Length: 336
Image 1 (spheres, rainbow, N blue to C red):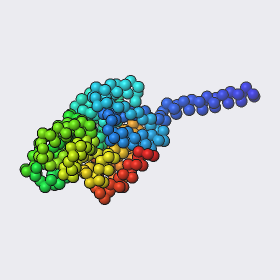
Image 2: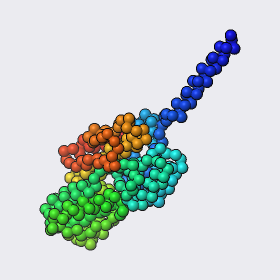
Image 3: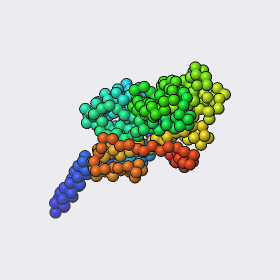
Image 4: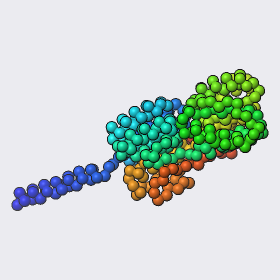
């Protein structure tokens, strides 16, 4: 009798152990997802990365996120993709430095069956699973229109570009020039890259102020960091910033403060929406349509019934009326 009871107990334990092992094999408890970003020197990508790490799925432990700094180098990003494939990542979020060179990195992941969700900047690859960002042509039009109107539709302007070959530089330039076509009395005096860098833009603007004394009436910066560098150069030259209407894009903290001071205009690019929205799309691809999005951006965007190739997060012009509210939101993101 004792032997029979012992055999029954052992059988039950064996079944329970086998069921537990099967459950672990069939249901993954945590997904390993990498985020390959072009660089973390600028505030915007740091905000993007912080927002990603605060996604509810990361906080709850469903996702282990690793952010890779691409150091503004396409070859570095490709090497990071190779490492993520070797380490068996479940998905990759990609913010490429180069619209063309980034395609090779996507191809590496695609061959390994790893989904890649683009965010913030584009890559020309048919293998990209999906993309979430904002319409950069539109933002380029918006900022150029702001400057054109501020200078009365006449005079010389300079355009400070992002890294040549990155999608934001290409598309914002397109938007800048499309808007300026409507102002035949505005002349583009110079258009060069400062690589999203405040320091490089300061140096560039110093040169332009010397080359075109009294001719520059407006400044179009394809991001805020460069617009702020140009403003610094104007101040250091002993000139009045308000005589040089300046526009930027991104809504970094210093730009918001400059808007509040009446020194520039800016357009907010929603780093939280783009980062957390990208993670939601990755989880949708991995888990399937049963996955429910958790990012706030989907309250104003269409999640839809199936995965789409492109999602656009709306731009938010920063004004005297909304800047204090936006600064409070920024404080909450950076200090929580």
